[in-house]
Image (cartoon, rainbow, N blue to C red):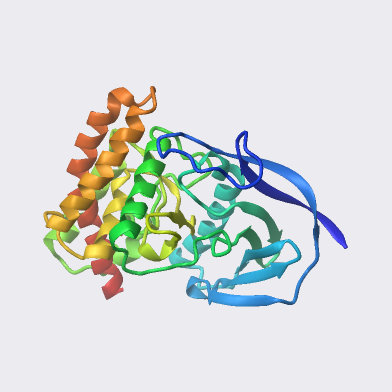
Length: 317
């Protein structure tokens, strides 16, 4: 039997099952390493293939309970921008879990990082099984309490990392920003949106208030538990940016309506209500709460238009 370091977390000053805490309490994960028996198991369930054929996602049953294994393979690809972006995204994700995940507030639930192993033809990323942790549901159309939980997750995450430089992460997070989607941009026909694209990107990337964004905040990346309780996975495109990139992507996936739509307005009010509360609870950011909201509300339609720019080029590419 091989003994292998395992990284687990517990709530600070609490042992055993984490206690319920008030949403305004800013708790952080504390990681520690302890040796645990590890035995390879043949009991594996393939959950899905990774996008583009870059490996597979597996649930492995071990003597210590189920874990999720992201088995990433460096296939040869075509050497193009898309292939290079995918390779880097997995490296960025492993860096996120190893060096950043411990800084995420407890109320922004993410899988616990268990380990990473580099191989000549890829890497193995081992994570907590969120299904077993009480988040077994998935939905491509969030509604009601689940949508509220997803919006609250983003607002809390963005508030926690306001003004933090994305060291070791994508300088500009999100998989669809203009700088990383030149091929799709070139595929766009002449149009007002194509003409505006560089200015839309400039306004978002040069925003006064920047944070760390998830970068792929689609409904499928939220793991759902009890009503209103969510966790987030898939941090391949986490990096710096304006929080509206995440929010515009999520809302467009859910409502598919223009920024002036009623449901969008309600979602924005929910997001900014939570964001203000989070910022005001932090002495460093409390004086900035109104200014952040003013700038980001103005940038929401910019982010929405920028995402439409990506979609138009992607569909034609």
